[in-house]
Length: 288
Ligand code: SAM
Image (tube, rainbow, N blue to C red):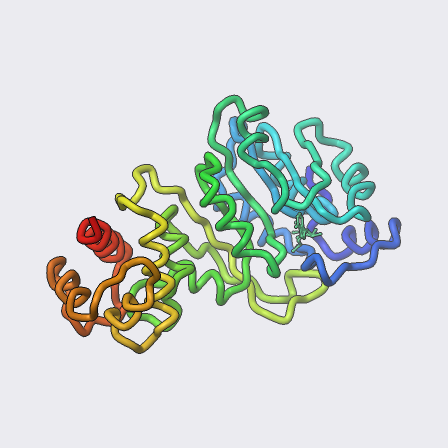
């Protein structure tokens, strides 16, 4: 039975070890059993699953994951939490605590060597200061993952799930949706954490696409996406004009847009992922 997840037991552990929160590591520990249950349910952990948890803290979510998964790999950067985790997780033999910076860890190697060729599930209450590098690092290095179920800042969850035309739609929406289907599971208020964060939070589940979005040149597509959103409220032609290496006049760019059914004065923030992929393919073709 998981024992952490309520304020009383959390405070007891913190006092026993005289633990002081490190702001620089984005430490906001979960103290609400309903939220913990919700995360584990949304992640659909089964006894066959290998789970990667990023930032176990004092092991609260880890205990819940150990109850459901085959094995949990929990990566924690803070030296002061390692002895605490040894204590709070001592009842479980299906957990490995890895003392490292998750951004420096070779996760592909870990999965290859320890997970019997299976795709993993990533579950975490993420440190908010590095949400984007962690998620993009996992996707861009093609870690074999079924899904990523994480607590993030509410605004970031909304940006990941946003669709064309809305104010939250941007390069992050497209980057995430290129690899996965996002679904916001729940909004979580600050009083579910200790200490309370200054922002609202949300649990989001990103389910990896079975079939990737087809595009010939991923890098070119993301250069185009970045350029389009750097130039918000300007036309796409103006944004594309600044993409290095395209070497096209505005008239030529307008013609490429029209060739894929887009108006010459279209704005980047209205394009779907599939339209960015088609545009990238048309531009790489016309460059040859
Ligand atoms: N999972 C715990 C919970 O829900 O109570 C703690 C979550 S807390 C928001 C984030 C955790 O990530 C902290 O334990 C922090 O020390 C850890 N962390 C911060 N930066 C990290 C990094 N670069 N690599 C690994 N862990 C990190």
